[in-house]
Image (cartoon, rainbow, N blue to C red; front, side, top):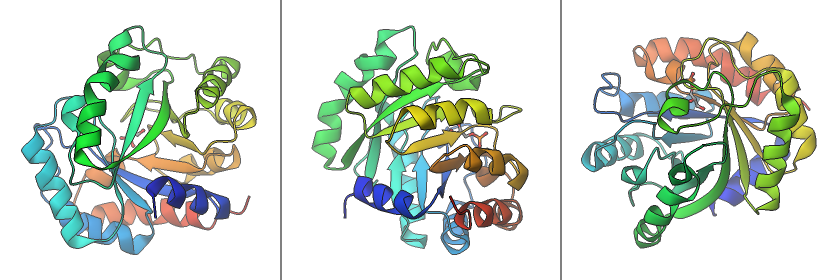
Length: 252
Ligand code: 1GP
């Protein structure tokens, strides 16, 4: 089954959790990646995303994905920060456009350079509108974003609607990795009301308490990066289990 069909089918049933790992060469948290992948599958994550805003070396990327694939059967989806984040080892790629960037490179430039590489890799491209919300963290800086103010839900809703009208399959609301607070529920709710495509929310999600308002506001997929990456597999399990349980048992 295509990954986009899997996503659409799953979100019909209820929200889900994706874990994100950033194979940045400075990231010292990747040594237990295989073991973590095994734990993630057991505790109910539905997919693993690989990528980040800073540089990724192709060999490191491939090593990380190989370790994941050897230890679990979860789909691996690339979440590329640039054209260096493409490899045939994954199952799919979020073929994303940072719609509120000020620099056309991040809206269509990298995509033009990356498209033939994606085609050659044979992996499934999943078109996605990517919106950076204040404060935006590293991705806002690297991606030259004009972050959408947290108290302006209608701007986010308009961007999301434009993404849907462009034919994008998903909309991703990004607060930035490691930021203090996740995206406010009011903004997520406004975007939810404006589009029908599956809605992904990430950035600053650390606890079950963070997750509840995001679920109630209508997110389909909640992404955690920092909580999945930091600490040992056991520590990750302790922090992520209640979060994933809360997501997987949520009734709309
Ligand atoms: C995914 O960038 C986020 O959208 C990940 O954020 O590291 O804060 O979970 P955290």
